[in-house]
Image 1 (cartoon, rainbow, N blue to C red):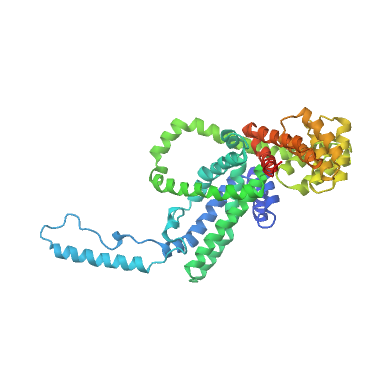
Image 2: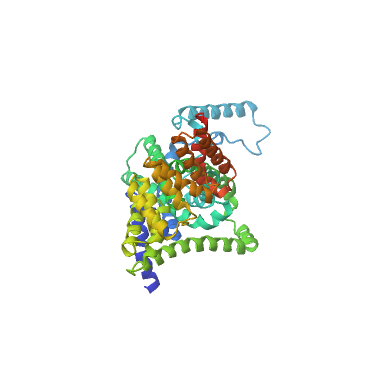
Length: 464
């Protein structure tokens, strides 16, 4: 066995370990999949699991809920003799129609929604390749498009090139984790020859879909830093892209694997498609290599910056515990590390540890009171406001708004302070400026300004 083949064994074991960890710690597992996951491993796992799932669960469901066709009971005779008695033809047709109607009346229906179910989903057991195709071609781009529309994370083309590879690996692993236990259950039942109610298989099928959706919520939080509400909305809406993949596959599959068609596609689009796929892969590898480089850098006991950067990565992935670990290690190395103090101050304020937050912000201001585009003053003002120290909050927020007069969050906080101090006209002016600034914000800022815009509008509706 070659050294290259031997090196693949531990890598595959790491991928398998991360896959299994999705059942216990999905957020941490998704983060590690981003750092060390393999698209080839995930795609191969999808094909293997889908073969088992389709050959057991989907096969049973297809047989139980199949919609009969009239052609199964009546086949018109081609080139029929002119002497054939029309009465015999009619009698044969009537008999076939009666058998068809009886089969239709006796067949099982999908509970609650009936045959409308088949407008969105399919139980076809032979299309085991459909999950990999639909997830890669339709679902992942669909999720990215919805995130761009709902969260304002950037233009679709840019985010697709930057995050497709990362999200695809997480998505494929999520699908495998959701379907693996139930595929194994199907194999056990089939191997033992145990006949069970079709509704049990339908329940298994539904549970696998719900588990996949749940794991995708963690994938979106990890890849894009989405909150739970937004992630749930996107995951629910993205199911339509899987239905689109089903329809496209149904009509395109006869031509999909045609050697003639594949040849011309390669001739005309091979260079472009190859470049795009390399671009997706390179973006994914760059993220993975950056994390590996930072982990190597923290071996240096004097390198506080590497811990800060790792902490920032974990914060973006909504893994606060690991972020705190690295940010605190950065302070152990250098108590004046400005970025670590700033981020720890924000985290302390969110937890209600107001004095601790002010201590961190004081360290930042002593070094550079314009840190993070002067947003340190906004954080100081918000902290004083939470501590009911309104005069100090007003001083800090006015200083910030002088420098950043269009910042929606800062204007909202200043309006809250003025309202508490009884200066209602000035408070209303701040809330109106906040709403105006939010409406004129560029698209990439809408995600961060939207919550403060809603709060400012709520204050105005209360009759300020």
